[in-house]
Image (cartoon, rainbow, N blue to C red; front, side):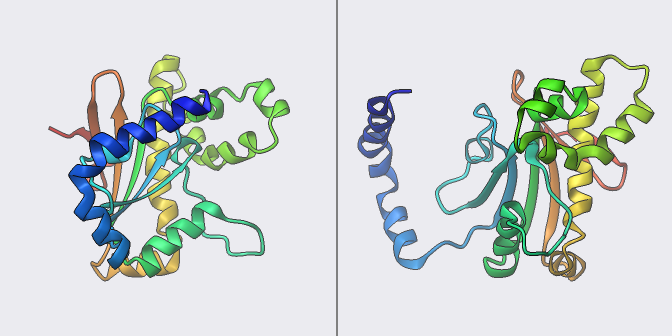
Length: 211
């Protein structure tokens, strides 16, 4: 995408959208941010959390990475971009909801399921990153061994969200907020083609349609 197209997109925002939200932007600049929710979403260009959740500027603290993965709590001297964003949202912004939003047709999930040699051998970071979903993959291969690839992919997209929610609870200060009733966790999967959303139910262990 040429630079002129990028800057033209900003000019369009400045001309058409900004006037509608001028007072909101001015207030946010003065008062700072106080988002209600952290959304952990995939980087996929087809999935926009702010658009899908009808959010205005300042509503959501959005963390995007490949395949909306949540690493378990593992404090050490390494660089933890995802964990640091979770910590900032929970401990400092005091958000009240954490949403993991996966989606259909996720390339990261395909890479995890298929374990292609070109990704395993040809990437510096991707193969190691998606290996965070190893437990979810093992569950799917155990329970969906005789299913079609499409069924396995959907099951893995869902399992990755479920295991991500479990990993969130490995962060002690996050679990403390959940146990105290000050923080609620949510798991969503977006079907791009049909603009349909399903939500994980901890009570049933299954995803149900958001009507």
